Length: 128
Image (tube, rainbow, N blue to C red):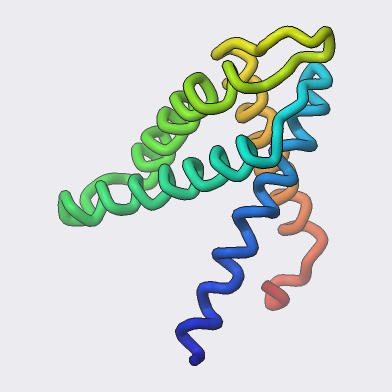
């Protein structure tokens, strides 16, 4: 039972990232993204992180963290260009492009980094 409950935060992170993605899309040029597309992109982003970890494990753990982050960011760029950009709607009603999807995911990553830094300053050292 304890193992099954450990997957709960992982499952709850998918709609949380989807909601943050919709918010970041609105901040980035008032772009609209459907919930279905936001959940799909959120799952693809989680799969990209798992793929980065899997590649590191398959080659024996010799991949540096910086290179692993670069691989995940390259996958994020591909996800934004293919899965997100052409399927979002801009403020004027036109369809987005690959550049729009990359911009939205860049906004999401920047927001995540800023939130992480802010929480590391606000929370005490042993709270997390």
